[in-house]
Structure formats: C-alpha cells, structure tokens
Length: 181
Image (cartoon, rainbow, N blue to C red; front, side, top):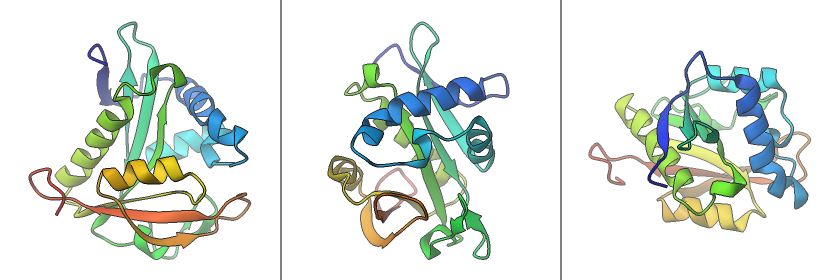
C-alpha cells in the first residue's frame, strides 16, 4: 500500500475510532470463537493500553484509520496485565511488548501489518530493548506462522483469565541494525 501514512498516535487522534478499528479488525477472530481482548474492549481499555507505551497508526490516502499497533515497556513483576498476573517474559528489562496489532479487513494482504510491526520493532530498538515479546491464541496458527516468519520464537504459553483459548508467548531478538540477533 504505497499511499499509506504510518505515524505515532497523536493526542488529536480519536481513541473511539481506534477502538472501532480494533473491533472490526478482530471480528474475524471472534467469529472463530476466540475472545481476544480487542474484540470488544472498551474505549477506556484502549486508552489505557496505548498510554502504556507507543501506539502507531496507519492511515490510507483519504486519511482513514486502517491499522494500528502498540509497543510498550516491560510490565512490573508484581503488576497486572489486563487484569492477569504478568508472565515472566513480559517483565524482563530488555523486552518490549507488542499488542493490539490490527489491520482493517479491506486492507489486509497489502503489507500494512508488516509496516506496523516494523515501526513497533524499530521503536523498541531505539529505546534500547534487545527483544520484543507478544502473545496470540494457540489455535490461531496463521498468526503464529506470521510471527515466526518475522523471527519470533515460541517461549511459553499462558491461560489468560476468561479467554476461550490458551495463548502462546513469543519473543524476537532485535539486532542493532534491524537484523534479528
């Protein structure tokens, strides 16, 4: 998608519109029975999640919001992540956490998600992080393969409270020049 603008989320951006994008983008996962947080999270939850780190947005040529991702610093070991105890890999000082990757269904297959992940990983590298970690549903095999192609490796699993699936935890080592270490 050559006419894509990718930039950090700004205070002028609508959190309501970002939440609506998350709902639309995650609807296909919900249809498979996977109740990812972004399927129906509140505007307040979106606000809290983007405030925890750096969110990026992708806009099409018309200025419409078509994608987003959030990357955040590690969590406190004694803290909570969306109400659950924090997995150890999310507390490591050298590891940023990627979440809320979403691309509008009409823009899938055009490289928007890859560009958003590139931006998130570049942000993490610029902040001095050596790794980026994420989680996704065990049964979401296409998502897992996508992350594996980008260099993410399985490092564990977790059962988040209230979720209809178990999640895999994945981590990627970041090289200083953009290469996988």
